[in-house]
Image (cartoon, rainbow, N blue to C red; front, side, top):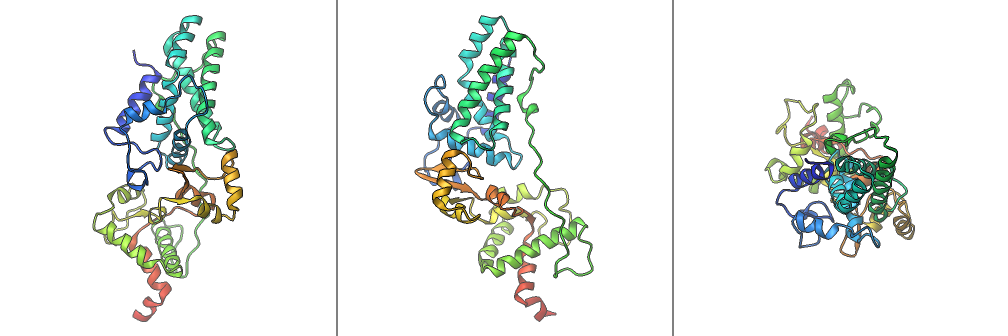
Length: 333
């Protein structure tokens, strides 16, 4: 009969399919490394042998990707981390079951639950390289304790049902902009338009409207389906007067997916040397991953740390806002 370990493995194999796995950027299209293995080979290289020694740098990137994807309610990389941790516990789970006369599926459920709890509790203040070892140690300790005192409270039938993500705090209420007059900013359609036009005005201010226009052209031509398919799922996106209702995108999609540590430290005003010290201590405020010898920081978590909303916007609104900021609409009027 399948147990928690089996369900985790099945879930991950289904999520990864036959595609190559990138533990540096999460997407081979954004990665500077050219060779990427299939998941079976990747898993074999990631499994810790009896938890001995320091986890490789691969684990540091895996944990960072797990944190990044958690922020977008995507549990794929969290489950990959769990699968690789659980794979190192097969022998130990069998030993506990035999020595203490406890059902193997119960032992493995306890281990999974403890590892997942440790994952959640180490979001802050623990360096990513230490997280897998802590997950493994807590899984073993919890399995022994529960098998000894026989005080089981939870048997996890399907691990994915146990996975929950905390809601991020909502952004402050929007106020009417100078672009829209006499409209109710509490109306979702109006609030959506305000967000897009404000960002268009910022694009104009920072002289990056040409890049935004090229990006919009790609969206409208269908060259970025992975962007629009994700952003257009929001329930409030129902305005009928837009050209191409499926062309929505997250603001972070316009920017590079990853930036170097010097730029990531400069944005919130952290000295570069201090940033590297924080990385070693596990206190840097954003997840980070390694590409070769370089540390990279994903843009969406950096935006979140700096309280920059990763808004869903539409190209029409962004371009209208830029045109208003440039004075073009006044000339037309």
